[in-house]
Structure formats: structure tokens, C-alpha cells
Image (cartoon, rainbow, N blue to C red; front, side):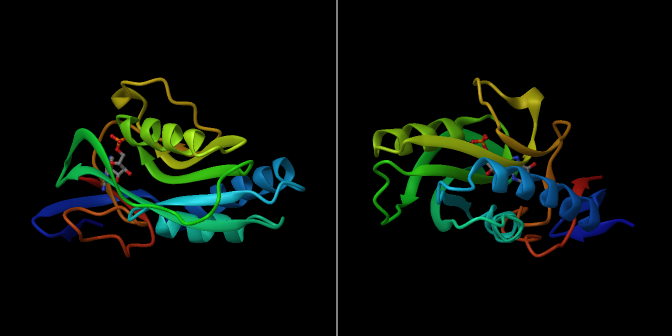
Length: 176
Ligand code: 5GP
């Protein structure tokens, strides 16, 4: 079934059920890996707010959650430049951090986030990303907890927007 977001058509790509099943598995892995570490999960706004909310509820060990806001995308193309817009208040010294990101495209955002968190004194920094576009990656990014590897096409839904719209869709759609 084709849907319209603003002026573009999108078709179903990853169902809500498939997303939730994958998140349950990632949650179990994080629970095992961080049982006694009280990790600080940092969701990258805006896109990761839905994934972060579901992922932390799939984790059974104690954790804390905060958010960071960066920006690099204008409409449908990554600018390749990243700037930090909103910081976090927590003391990161000695903390075990899990970055929660919606999608890794060029990897520019993740490189910047990792650098910032390491220089703030974090003990470890791991990355959970719902989606990864391997063809688009310019930089060497390791994703510790990956939802789905996808082809290099524009997607919306489940937190991801097209020009501000479509974030509330409970599944992921790809441009038709
Ligand atoms: P990167 O810094 O890796 O190039 O870009 C990552 C950010 O670009 C993501 O957090 C997301 O906001 C945006 N992005 C990358 N690919 C897509 C896509 O296919 N759809 C949407 N809606 N956003 C994307």
C-alpha cells in the first residue's frame, strides 16, 4: 500500500512487527552485556526518539537515558556536516555509554558523537543503530547493536522524517 508524505510516495519496507522482534533481540543482548554497568543510553534527537523509547524498554537491567541533538540532514540529502545543538547535563566521567541512533548514513554524525563523548571522559562508548546504509558509509563506523542493514534509499517512519513529516508512522517506508 503506497502512502504519501508531503509531496512524495512511499511503500512499506520494514513492518512494525519486524522492528519490534529485532528490538527484543537487541534488548536481550544489551541486558547481558550491561548487567552490572548501569549504562547511560544517549538517544540522538530527533529521529531516534521512537527507537530509543522501545529499545530501553526491551532492556531488563538498570540504565539511565538522556538525549543529544545534532543536525546534518536537509530535506533528503546529508550535508555531511554535523553540528551539536543541544548538550547533555550528566557527568560522563567513567560512564558506559550506549549511543542510540535511528540510522547511520554517511557516518559523520556518529564520528562526531563518539569523539565528543570520549573527550568528555566516558569509559566506553558503544553504538546501537536501527538502520545502517553500508553503501553510503564514508567513514569506518562499527555498530555494536544493529537493527537492519538496508540499501541506499531514502526511508521514513518510526522516528525518521521527510521534511519534518512521517515520524509517527509505526513502520518504516521507503521512497517509491
Ligand atoms: P549521517 O551523519 O550518518 O550521514 O546521517 C545520519 C542522519 O541522517 C540520521 O540520524 C538521519 O537523521 C538522517 N538520515 C540518513 N538517512 C536517512 C533516510 O533514509 N531517511 C531519513 N528520514 N533520514 C535519514
